[in-house]
Length: 310
Image (cartoon, rainbow, N blue to C red; front, side):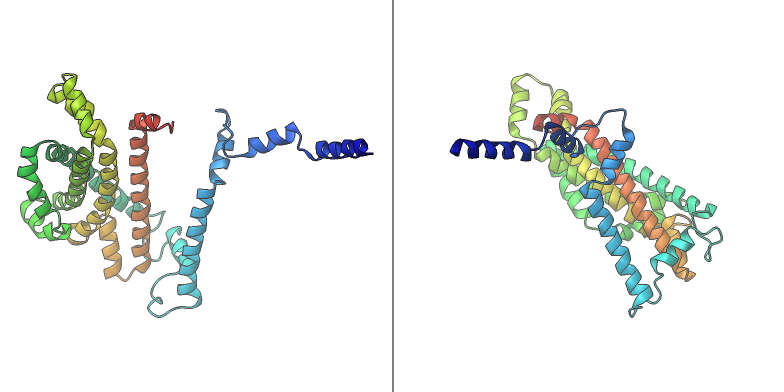
């Protein structure tokens, strides 16, 4: 009798256990299952359905829902002059916008092109000047004593405080705006590069000295690679501060660009143009930072391999 019960229980356990095909099917649906190179749509579908993307979409949905409730439904005090998101989207995509700016007007893209050109010129100038100065301050005691106090003295000055001086020194309208845009990103680059050099383990310098490295070899094989993660972090910060410094420069000294478009919308009481300019600035800034992160991840694959992440 006991033998029969044991046999029955054994049969029931075998029936309840999942088959190998069911296990493989669940494994293929998991996010850890590798995707073949010839399945881009499956890769895109998995990325769109991932948990971070769903949470990001939820955050945007909550934000726009609160915006709509505050402006269109409850009409809270001091919110009556702010356009609701549906009306703003309608104006943004209209072929005949009420205030002259939309996705179908050439002026909109002209403002974008001018702002992007100014920001990227200022950004690359800040990297070309700030990264070498940051390396010099962090690596050389003489450079630190000469330049670091000056950098710390000038760094807290707001970029807008430089606008009158920039207008007096530089001719035209482009140079002052680019100079003001460059200042904030320059100091962010210098400081992060300096911190990157100072964070390098002293044992690397000792090992380089034992191997007979020249100063040039130490610079390009120890200092620059060691500071590279901080440099790219500084570049992301520099790109962000370049965008909001640009707006300040264009508000005061510019005659075109997204900052000028926002200020013109304020003076002409074209409120939708203000929000269109602000959202466009946010999207452009996010795309710029994303490109910097992608380049940084590509150049620092060696660091990911050393950590076992790739």
